[in-house]
Length: 76
Image 1 (cartoon, helix red, strand yellow):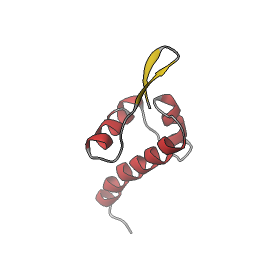
Image 2 (cartoon, rainbow, N blue to C red):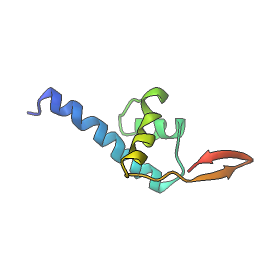
Image 3 (tube, rainbow, N blue to C red):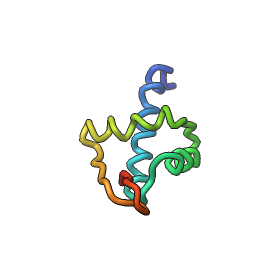
Image 4 (cartoon, rainbow, N blue to C red):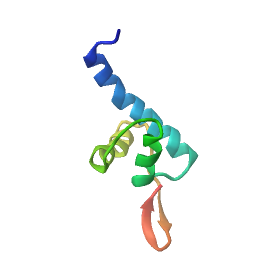
């Protein structure tokens, strides 16, 4: 059986893995990403999700691309 502290450390890694999985499939951010993760039984609020892509980029796991979306700047 996995100890509670080990499980606690594992969950953020699985969420990051799913973020990467969905990010390579389609432009996904904000509520769209929260809904996609909910399909995998992860319950995240915007406050919980927003720092993850920034930290993933800082750690070299992802690279953000900025492009115009219907006249507004968006991050891809």
